[in-house]
Length: 117
Image 1 (spheres, rainbow, N blue to C red):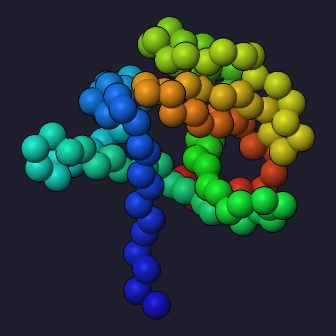
Image 2: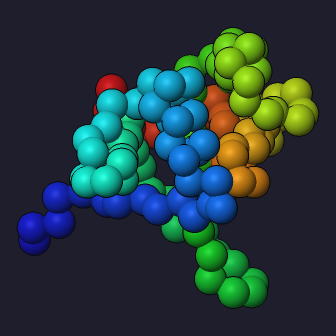
């Protein structure tokens, strides 16, 4: 099998602002695919499959080692994080609101992870 990676897409009416946040605030390395279309190198990733009782859906979660410290740093850099981290069972986390209303879960996992640093 020759699957070599995954490509995540975030859709937002504020694409330039979100690209700037990922580039300048979070600091992810990137390439320019042409005309300012930045493609970001993600940190190591894992994929989970959960059952649903309704429509199929997907979501993006960002893992971190110390969620409280990460939240403080992101807030200091202007990222909207409306609630304090809380116990989610599987970890401690909260949501971050990115430009254009893109919402992601930011959490410190308590479960075993498949991520290799």
